[in-house]
Image (cartoon, rainbow, N blue to C red):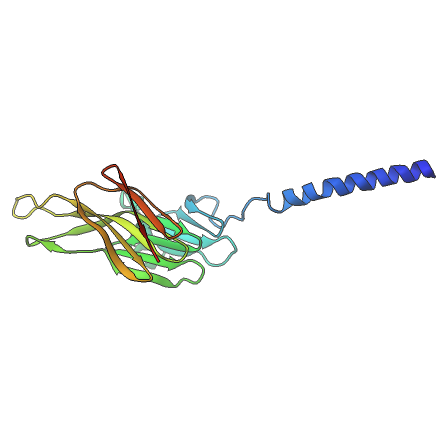
Length: 219
C-alpha cells in the first residue's frame, strides 16, 4: 500500500507541475481572434481591431465581434475596376489608411475621416486643406496618415498645382497637419520635399525633415 500511495502521490505532483504550463499555453499564448475574412488582405492589425481589403473594398472590424465596417473602395480597384459590392459600397476611394486600438483614420476622396470601429461614430471629418495660390486651385492629397487610440490624427499632405493655359503651376509643396482635442494645427507648411518617417506614439508625433528629427505633442 505504501508503494502504491507513493506512486499516486508522484503522479499528482507531476500533474500539478505541468498544469500551469498547459493553462498558460491555452490562455495568454493563444492566437488572437481574427475578424477579417480568410480570403482578405490585412492592411493593419492590433489587439483590438483589423483593417483589411476584401474584393474592391476597404473594411475594418473588431476582434471581439460585431459588424464589419465598410470604409470605401481601394485605390487599387481603380485599374480595371468592376464593383462587386452594393451601390453604396461602390462609392468613394479610400487611401493612406491607419489603425490604432479601435480607431481608424483614412483619406476619403478629398476628405480626411477618423472613425471609431467599435461604435461607428465619426470622430473627425474635414476637407483636406485646399487653398488658392496665383489663381490656381490646389489639389491636396494625404500621403501618410497616423492616428492614436484617442482619435488624434496627423498627416503628410502633398499640394499639387496643375498647369494653367499650358503654363506650369507653382512647384508642389508638402505640409504636416494635425487634429486633436484642441482642433486643427498646421505644424509645417510649404516644405519643398516630403517629410519622412511620420509616427505617432501615444501623443508624441515625430517625423524627419531634411534629415533632421522633428516632433510635436498632440492632446
